[in-house]
Length: 198
Image (cartoon, rainbow, N blue to C red; front, side, top):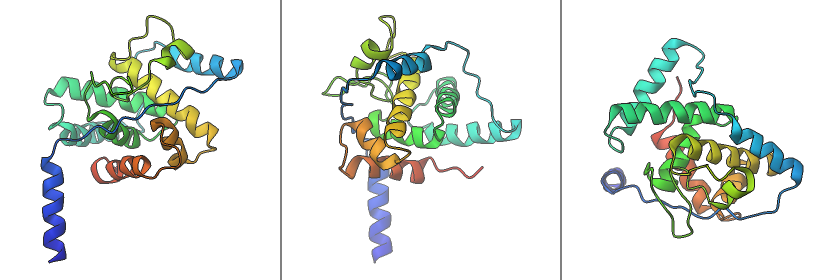
């Protein structure tokens, strides 16, 4: 009976649209050296061609993740562009690309133009104050690569502040430090929807 109930709940959850749980990163004054380092981290404009351990792994990863994302983003080219950019930006920031996919699922439900009630924007729900703090006036948080670059850089910054504690870094990212709901949702999405053993 428990198994039937779990299957029914799982099916119901799968049929519901992914709800965005966007919080608000909190503005915290940054030391000049930190601000300069973060600005440098988002300034590179090199083409985002991700480097995989092998061509086979690249093909397998993109094929598998594209299949999982197809319901949310029907256009194959748009899907592949997003996945390549997520992989590139996550690896560049020292993050797990699948964890970043879980975060995007929770934050925006993969909606490029999502805006939260707090004003956070795009796939990774980046707060506009970050553009003023570490970017420049030309940065558009609805531009896919800009949004992913900022989001991954900010999460890396929070991981560094929290000495590698992902739970606390995710809490900071969402503006819910110390509360379990958001980190648990991201971890759940990461493990259940985007887990990859390669």
